[in-house]
Picture 1 (cartoon, rainbow, N blue to C red):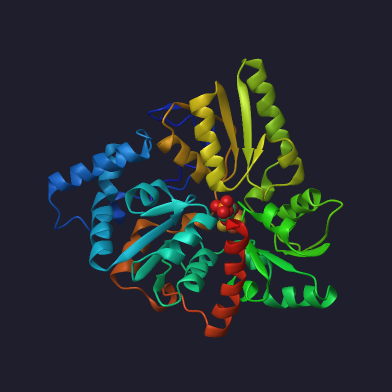
Picture 2 (picture 1 turned 60 degrees about the vertical axis):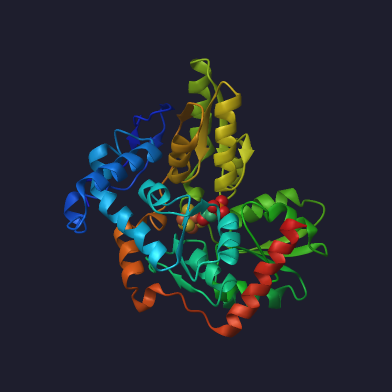
Amino acid sequence: MSSTLDGLKGIAVRRGSVEMVLKLPPLPSRKDQRHSLSMDNGELQLEANRLMERIGQEMRWSFDACLTIAPMTLKINRLKKEKDVILIAHTYQTPDIVYGVADAVGDSYTLSKIARDAPQSTILFSSVRFMAETAKILSPDKTVLHPSPEAGCSLSEGVSAVDVRNLKTLHPGVPVACYINTTAAVKAECDVCVTSSNYLSIAESLPGDELIFVPDRLMGQHLRTHLEGKKTVYLHEADCEVHAAFNSTSIERQRKEAQKRGIELRVLAHPECDADVLAASDFVGSSESILVEAKRIASEEEAAVMMITECGTAERAIAESEKPIQLMGTCSMCRHMKRTHLEDILQAIESPRGDQVVEIGDDVIVRARDCLDQMFELAES
Ligand code: 13P
Ligand code: SF4
């Protein structure tokens, strides 16, 4: 890998202005590329142009940088067709994956539905482990590939099936809701799964005046506030190492800066953030809803946007906003989400290692599937 471009500020983009500090991983370097030997130069140039156009960050993802990855994106796209693979990527994946090779990109709810309904025989999930496991639970007869099995998540690793069983013993008969950022074994212990796009409405619709919610204590506190006077919510102690690190001081600082310059500022935050951050924000939603709202603001309002989430959402806003978008503040980087590289995807499609093929025991699949099906039923009702 080339040198780190960490803390990049004011990156040049085609549409809009970026005064945001983006924490981004290094770009692939030429020495990583060993796949161009049999490729036609014209085909590579066309692919490099396509990538540069789609990513929309011409200084960082220059023609040269795109030419460096073009042999891999071409090869992966060819192999996907030959091997009947759908490549699903979370928004926090890098733009070479999102715009180079992904067939579907979105938040965890959208991607779960896509994994459940995909007609292809193989699903390759470019993201963290719990999302690939979720795809396997929802499509157990398909081959599910996860190119970076070591890509975890501080939330899914912060709660075990034993923790959930202990909570159930402490609060017998109380419904248990788990965030989707959990292992299959944890989902198997829970009544219903929720995501950042439906946790409030699903929790509200559950019977009784008590609820166990695992594992995110910050999302849980938001839930507690929302359900005040209606339900007692019992929580677990885990958080997202990325979103829990944001604080409301930086929001106040940006608001003052915007005011000084006569700019309207809209602050959009992910519900894995602290209560102070959420209270200081104008909008709270999933990674996908933050993106949709940012694009709406760019097209309908004269306002700058501050995104309190992982930088992948900002990179998608830069690439996809139809109107120039003005970004301010600082986003963050999830080291787990950024573990997957095009090279890993190519290797996993060509000849997956045993640990890249997601396997879950039948009993766990059946119970975890009930938990996810319950979510789909409540979310769509
Ligand atoms: P979303 O469902 O909002 O994409 O959240 C997943 C996640 O891991 C956020 O940190
Ligand atoms: Fe997990 Fe947080 Fe990374 Fe999302 S951003 S995968 S919740 S550590």
